Length: 225
Image (tube, rainbow, N blue to C red):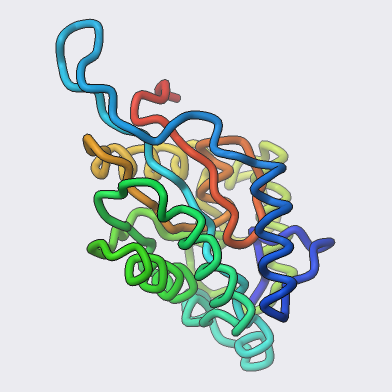
């Protein structure tokens, strides 16, 4: 199905050397800009919650499902490619310096497989959060072609309302953001939490379009709206 959160211009790494090189480049381009450690107390004396790390799933094997003309959410059964597995292994090892409390994942296969790999390498518990699933490009769940997803995504990002779109209704940006922020706040803790989810989900709360296995931080005290 359409890789709705993939920059089309970035090639997926296919060898361990390419994975290591790409991880090093990404670490230089997008370092964690704040320490992932809890501050014991806030100014009002209450315990301050640690930030969460948002990591996008590894490279998914879209050709495996694209030729089957699966309908709607059935496309989200897509697993990772071998290169995608290697991406997540590399990123989990880089993140191991942080004292994560647990890993929480979207229920979609590409994210859940990524989160399982990360949790195993980090030695922490894996949890599943349904509301971290990817943005829904067709609320009737009847799409079959990548181009349908791409058209809806372009419209949503351009500010087109679902009722004004010439096609099936999609998940409204404001609804997506509210869903994701509520889910993240349910998992805010006194130690950092690693959240494995999707590109459009991460964009909705950070404004950033990131590549597979890339990560950014999000504060538990992020502003509403």
